[in-house]
Each structure stands twice: as structure tokens, then as C-alpha cells.
Image (cartoon, rainbow, N blue to C red; front, side):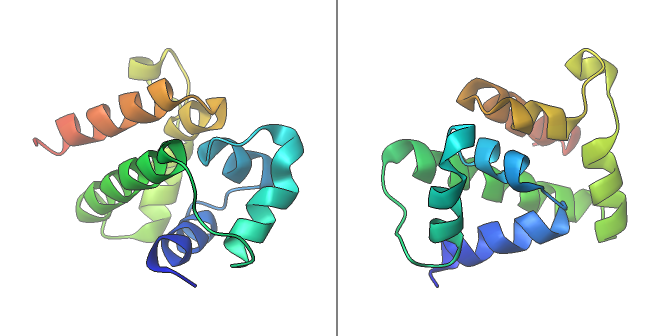
Length: 116
């Protein structure tokens, strides 16, 4: 498996993403769960700029969060906690939205709270 696929697999486990969440986070439609599973199993490759850009943003978010929260459980809790900054949604809710805009909003917020 490639490095980006290994990263996504670890992220799915770390953030306890269900099928719907991992499908949305990667920018696939809900009916494309088989494609996501094939990707994560290494039976298909990462194609398309959108998917590559999403993975790049997720790497940035994860790197910054791991520096903020040395404890994976604290990071997982933070991802699931509703925040005023997101109109009462959790960071994970933003990712479940599936839009690149919301993913980039989360990346920008994490950069802000990381003082970067």
C-alpha cells in the first residue's frame, strides 16, 4: 500500500470513521463505498486532483492535531465535540459534509488554533 493509503487507513482507525464518514471525507458519493473500500484495500489507486488535494489537507490537519493533542483519545474527542465556531457542528460533522470547502475550513481553523 502507498503512503497516502496507509495514512488514510490509520486516520479512519484513529478517528473511528464509519463507512459514511470515510466515504464523505474522501469526496466520494455515498453510493461509492465499494470504490472507497477498493482504494483502502490497495485494489485501486489514488486518481484525480480532488482526492490528492483532500489527502494533503487531511495530512495537514492530522499533523497539527497530533501536535496539539498528544493523546489520540483527546484528539478523537475533539473531533466529535460540537463547536460554536462551526455553528454547533463538530469538526467531524464538517468532514461528513463531504465538501472541499468544509474540509479547507477545518484545515484553516486547525492552523489558526495551532498558531500557524
